[in-house]
Each structure stands twice: as C-alpha cells, then as structure tokens.
Length: 209
Image (cartoon, rainbow, N blue to C red; front, side, top):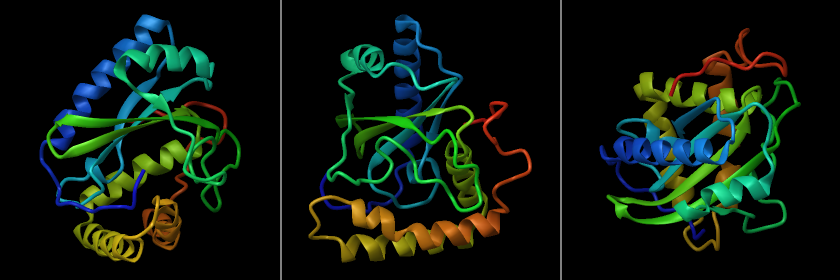
C-alpha cells in the first residue's frame, strides 16, 4: 500500500463493513472453515474518528487454518494474501505482542483487496487471528476505549494526522504503523489492559463487534 492518507470519518463505513462481514462469513461457511466471530475493528470502526480509508475486519478462529483453503474460499471475493511491503512489515504473519501480555498465539493470516464501490472506503484489510490471541482482544478493547473516550479519540486523531504528514513521501505505511506504538502503550495503561478476563492461551474470549 502507498503512504498513509487520513480522511474524515464516513458514517457509511460501518454498513460497508457489515456487508463484507456477511460475505466473508458466507465464504467461510461454504468452505467448511470455522469462524468463531467476525468483527469490524480499527479506526473506521470508531464513530467520529478520522482514519485511513481502509476497513479493518477481524475473523476469530479456533486455530489458524490452512492458508490454501482460506485463499480458495476468499478468492471469489477478490481478497488476496497480503505479504507486506518489507520483510519485517508488522502484523503480516504474526502480531507483535503487547507489553505484559501472553506472548503465545500471535500467528495470523492477512488478506487485502482494493475497493471502488463502497463509498469512501478504498480497501479492505482482513485479519485472521486465533480466538485466544491476546492481540485480538487488545484491538477490540482499544476500539471500544476510543469509542467512549472523546479526549483519547481526538489525541489519537491528531497523532495520526501528524504521522501521516511525516510519512507523506513514504512508499508504504510501515513506519507510520510503528510510530504509533508509544500511543498504544499509553492507551494500554489507560485501558487497564490486559484485563483479568483477557485470553491467556486457554479459553477463547467472548467478544462482541
């Protein structure tokens, strides 16, 4: 993907995400692939928050399925396996564990496609994570925290706009992603995460999108 571009929040993003969640759910069912839950995550899932115009969706699975089976199931939806712009691109094959969290179960599959008929959304990013992945719990907790804390939401938006300007000439947004880590550390502390009920590699969490 190209350098990051931050655009105003589009109220159509949640409905577009819901349409894609139904399509992906149906594709998993038809292929016989288990999916515990599908969720709209990331900044486009936070009302009022400016964001990169890419819908982030998360599929929770009991175990990471065979990549070929997933690619075959998602092929008709034009979702392709993302490989990252660099050998060390973050969050492609494995999520970087958050400080203090259980380091297990961070493996994942990442898929992507461009969009041209879903309002201002320019692309779709699909994260396939284990249901007991601590990072899967973190991204939902972070989304929900931003939804209810206007001050944190505005601080995060200012940071994203600043980093987007700093990386305007970048060939990808890997550095933009990494530069948000300090805010994520601050958010983790403010959220009180990991929660006592957060997944620790045993029982799958109960999460609502």
